[in-house]
Length: 268
View (cartoon, rainbow, N blue to C red):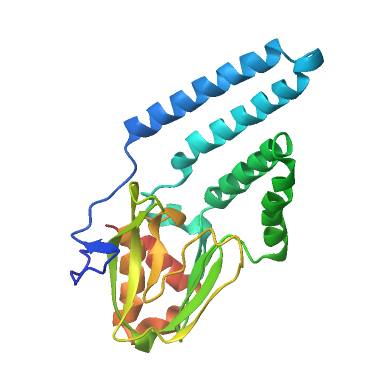
């Protein structure tokens, strides 16, 4: 099945264009990881050199900083679009529910833990702030997400938000670029999402599930499925949702294995 995303008027934080499969430049990731691992190796070497006597505290700090470097510079490998199609996508699918891939939240949890330890060795009073993240995980206000289709509409449970939209309120499903910017305004980050757009207003509910650890941005007007979170090719995810949006009579499949098999049958 060949599928091209629809065109439309771009919003202030997105661009709409014919789909081009995007992954972060491999060379850039290799260089970044190599630099991070090299710096971490130097820190480990330095820590081993001063690990006895008065240098023990400095050695512990250097080892923890090395861990932060390794986790930080290798995390982009687990934060990019998937190219999986066919039966390979089914390992994260149950009926008409597609769960987020496992590694994104795990890697972020490990990185926050490493920073908590680093703070304990330097600015110890900040450590409890970082540890509240694990309280949010235990309370499940932060959790791995999913998208679920049923007869009434679409539900998207993100890392730190929950929202639902009825089929009647949705008009189009297309792949868009989302552009975010740092608070300083000089670094932009672009990623692709499958955007479910309403005619006028998105009916249903939406709420942040976490008060402090809002680690995934909740869209305001649309329902955006970040393509980096799903272990499914973006075009396959888009075409699957668009099929049930455009074919109401086929929604009896939702919640059954037939919906999962339909997802596995779509090719870009």
